[in-house]
Image (cartoon, rainbow, N blue to C red; front, top):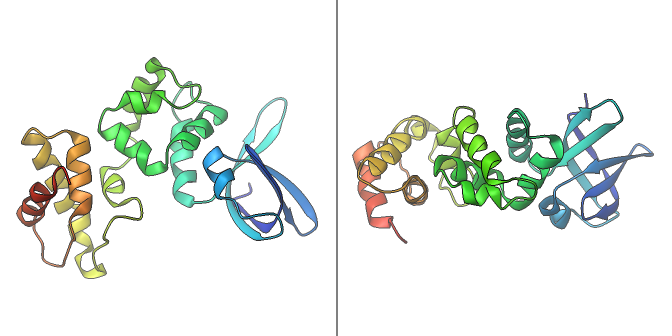
Length: 204
């Protein structure tokens, strides 16, 4: 099993990259998002990989982030979603966009990915809710303000409780998640403190 490759970019195309590692060129299939973010030829890159073995071929699927790879593995665990379809989803949406779509029941967002129809999108939401974590949806992405290590328990409990409280008040899952993500978490904050701030941020 190849967990990752670190080497020099030899060639980049819209759906794959060739990485030279120790004089050997590895062809890695990538999403259109990662292809556009790939360093130019001649520069070093680290690609997290998943090896797919079928009757007719062995293929490497690669991702610039570990988070994308983790979500990719979750996607292909859903019956009927193969390696190429999962890659197509991650080409259209980031890992955190997928989490938001799942916890917001937004099947239309998922169905916009190539090869994913409305029926498959609904199936993905149904199955992924048990496999993805709500706290990852809250914490994922660059715009989340991470709490200090001393207040890490807040992330695991109070943030999730605040999201659930907002949905109980009638806000959609998407509105609740996005509002809670904007809250600047500090040590000692409780659910009601996060909830108050999130209510002020709803719609911003």
